[in-house]
Length: 294
Image 1 (cartoon, rainbow, N blue to C red):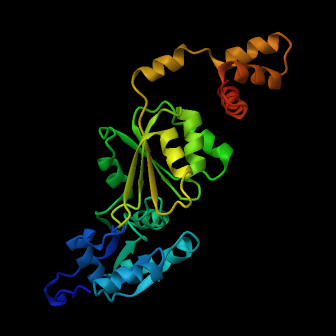
Image 2: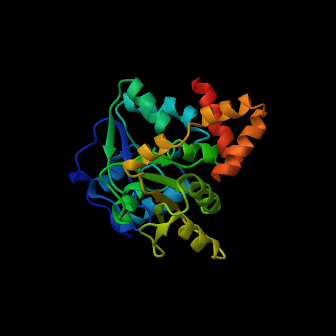
Image 3: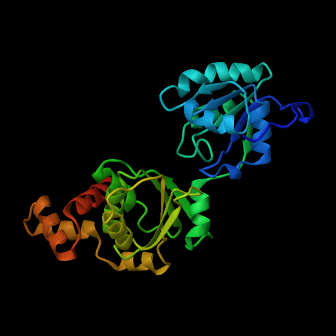
């Protein structure tokens, strides 16, 4: 355990909500400011108090904790805001990394701002940024898209909406869903699309897989067990990809032409799928979007 510093020499924190980034795995990644804030906070709101207690105990931090997760966040807000109004400094941490980034805390932050109370970011570790900088993909522009939907159809639609995006795309994914996500991403972006998978960042078994979406899928599919927190990065589309897409026949025009020949909507989509090599469900969702824009 690293001993705590002399609290008497540390200036008191101004009242407010402090968003404290904590290590992804390697405890050496904690910042000096994060330690000072956590030691000086009147209370620490944690995604999981049991998980966070290991970190706090390691650094000799004895501030009281309170749980704040997806299922209780709204009921926790009022007493925390009252504490800040009464002069308290409240720290918010997640299980790892930057709080409120695909983690609980967004509602608390929004309500704190709406109440006219200060919010202070205490920056530090972030899995998305750590993976991006070490990926070898373009870092000049990127889009963090969080977790893909759990259901296959919704996940395909989610990826399709990003299919022509020029920026490097960053996703979080759970180990038990990563193969499904890689399969659907390959179907939408193309199996040869460059991608990087980062697993267990800053931990003992940290791993980067670089290659095409299909190569990443095949690599993981060959394993008996997939473990750890996962960041998936997919290269953005090149500048000419939009031009190529615009040169392709418009789906709405294709369907209307086949309907004019007497085919039903279902048969029209089946024929287009067969001729283009695309999935019927993918085309059906695109057709629904076409009708919504008309």
